[in-house]
Every structure is written in structure tokens, then in C-alpha cells.
Amino acid sequence: MAEPPRRSSLGAGGSAAALPLRARLSFAAGHFLNDLCASLWFTYLLLYLHAVLGYSHRLAGGLLLAGQVADGLCTPLLGYEADRSAGCGRYGRRKSWHLAGTTCVLVSFPFIFSPCLGCKENTPQWAAFIYYLPFIVIFQFGWAATQISHLSLIPELVTSDHEKVELTAFRYAFTVMANITVYGLAWLLLNLQVDRPERTEHLGIQDVPVFRNLSLIVVGLGAVFSLIFHLGTKEKPYPLGSLPQPESTPLLQKEPTRCPRPLLAWKDWLLEPAFYQVAVLYMATRLIVNLSQTYIAMYLTNSLLLPKKYIATIPLVLYVSGFLSSFLMKPVNKWIGRNLTYFVGILVILAFASWVTLTRTMGAEIYGAAALLGAGSATILVTSLSMTADLIGTNTHSGAFVYGAMSFTDKMANGLAVMAIQNLHPCPTELCCPACISFYHWVMVLVTGGIAMAATVSLCCIMIWPIRVRFHGPGCGRLRGDPHDDVSLQGLNEARIPYDETESVEERSPNSTVN
Image 1 (tube, rainbow, N blue to C red):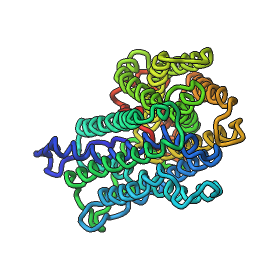
Image 2: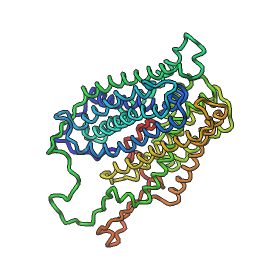
Image 3: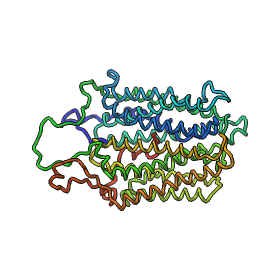
Image 4: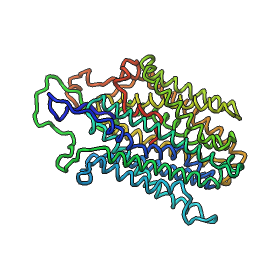
């Protein structure tokens, strides 16, 4: 979330020097490890636990749910604590938290994509659950700490809005690189199995080295880029006495010429119907994006019975098509507005769901379907984030609560949805039976078309009942019946707000998954 521009410390007559290109590149490298791990986590975790290690559907879903819950709880708590800590000596508070988070990710993530140490064929699966759970919790804690500290550095390194947007663009460029790297490495490792050609068709226990090596390469590359970040990024240290204090009454009181518009505290958002309208739409959007990414590999291998190389190439097509379509968001939003742009994205998602429904077998045409899904997912995700930024408006002092609450909601919803789907799996054993061919077929239809219909209902509610944020606390404007006491978000309903004015940090990374 971008902050309003601050004055340079050089005074009114001077200007702060622009951040050098080397410093901007080193900063952008600081989230590369997170992006690599997030891509591997969402795309391949369920597939690895079930198809490679042979664990039950409930165990795989339970581990993913545990990770989502841990991430959802850690994100707001770490954000609160990171703003109030002084850092480690003179190292800087943001870089201190970043270093702690990076360390947690490096020491835990390789164990998630490696076989259980000490487990044998007769080891009960609940023991494997207990084995993997601490590594997943540590990983999610480290991932959240790294993400929060890295985003928080943007307004501290640069001052102007232009520089903040530029840093965000560099950051997103590294996100693109990370996703392409993961899927490219997965394709390469799967195709390197040439000594026994029969091993290259379907996933099994023989592919354990592929995912283990992939996770080790990811961690190694991420560690190098994190080192570049810590060596090249300079943060101003914060002594304990200079930590920013919570907003309070100003030292100098002036008699206002007119009643100031009240600012919304975090608890005031809970009384706003608009908060829940946007939250439901954002949650439905995240369910479509994350669940389709999670189950696309299972659909390819179990329903379409495609060779396992497709679990690398199809996610890559999804990501590239979404990335390319994101460039159209700005002109399309200006032309037809937020609501219609979101509706266009929903239509593309429904076209993919219809294609999957009517086609039981696919070959090369799966690439066309994947391009539709990627473009539609990017469209609705970018637009829903724009709506969230519009909802916050000028209430940036409580914007972190809005983003945190919606992030927590979407993580919990995704975790519970995965657990529900895993519990509905028709096969009694860990191996896929003939019934799971149609099962994953209809899962892809449901998590795209079914949830898209629910998102359409939520969008209709926003179009019928225009979103208005009203402050419910006492204020002088309300006592006098001041009509300015209500804050109307006409940009959500009439598309009169230029796209540039509400473009947020998150809009620049439409396919990043937080986890």
C-alpha cells in the first residue's frame, strides 16, 4: 500500500537524491526467495504429497490448511510487531525482520519437499503429519516476515510516488523471473529422466529426487538473491527513542474553519457494509485464482492423463498469459470502469469452465484453455485489488487493517476449501482410482465456473447497492447534518476515478500468491 509522499530531509529548498539503479535492483532481489517458494508451494505441494509420496488426501489437505492458517495468523501479528521494533542494533528494523524471515525459510522449506526422515512403509500417516507440520509453520512465519519487511522498506527508501511505483515495478519484474524460473526448472528436471523413458510419463515415488532437487535449487538461488539484497540495500537504523509513535492529538491545536472529515479507525471498518461487500468479492477472486493454481496439476495428470511434463508447461502458460493481459488493465479500466472490467474477467473464466465441462479429453488445446484461465484470473485479481484500494481511499492510516483482514479471510477460505475438496475425494486408497478421473474434472469446473457465478452475484450487489463508506462515530459534521460526513466511492460504480489515482502496490503483481 503506497504511502503519501514525504518531504525530503534536505528541506524545502533541496531534493533527495534518486535511489541508484544498483540499489533498486538489490532491493527488488529481496523478495525473490519468497516468490520462488510461493510458486512451488501452491502449484506442487498437493501433487507432491499425494502423487509422489503417496499420502492420503486428508493428510495433504490438512498440511496445506495448516500452512494457510499459520500464514493468516502471522501476517497481521508480524505487521504490528515489525512497526514497533527497533531492529538488531544498527542493522535496521526492516532488514532485521527480513533476515530473520529469510533464515526461517531457508532452514525449513527443503524439508517440506523431501521425504519424511525416519519414516518407513509401515509408519502411520499421522506421524508424517506431525513431522511436516513444524517445518510448514516455520516456513509460513518466515515467508510472512520477509514479505512484510520488504514491502515496508519501499516508503523508507524513496519519498516520491514515482519512485515508489518504480521500485514496485522492479519488484514485480523479479516475481515474473521467479515464476518462470520455477516452471522452467521443473520442466528441465522432469525431462532429464532419459535413462528410463517409462519413468517420464506419470508421477510416482521415483520422482522424489525431482522435487527434492527443485526445492534445493530454489532455496540456493533464493539465498544468493537475499544476500545481494542485504549487501546492497542500506536502511536507516531506528534507535528506540525515534520509533514512530501512534497517531495522537497534535501538539498545536488550531480552531478549524470547518469540521474536518473523520478518519476511520480499524474498528469502524467493522461497521461498514461496504467493507463486507468488497471482502466477499475479493475472497471469491482469491478462491478462483489459488484453487485453480492448486488443482491444475492434479487435473492434468489424473483427469486428462497427460504426461507429467505438462505440470510445468501449463502453469507457465497460465502465468505468462496473465502477465501479458495485466498490461491491458489500465486502458480497459479507464474505458469501461472497474465493474465491467471485472465482469469481462468473469466471462473469460466462465469460458474456460465451459470448455472444461464440454471436453473430457484434451491434447494441445489445453494450452488455449490455460491461456483463457490465466488472462481471466489476472483480470479479476487486478480489478478486485483496485476496488480494495478505492474502498480505503484517503483512510490510509487504517488501510493495513483492511488489507490484513481481507488477506486473512482469503487464506482461511482457501485452506478450508482445499480441505473440503480433499475430504470429498472418492478413492478409498492413496492411489488414484477410475473415479478420480471425473472428480478432478468437476473440481476444475467448480473452482472456476462455480465460484465465478458466486463472484458475479457479489458484483451485482455492488452494482445495485453503490458502495458508500460512512463513519459511525460521533463527529461535528454528523451533529450538524453535514452531507460531507459520508464518503462516496463513485469510482466503484460509475468509473469516474482515473485508474492511476487508485493504482496500488498489489496491482502490479497480479499473479503473485501469498500466501
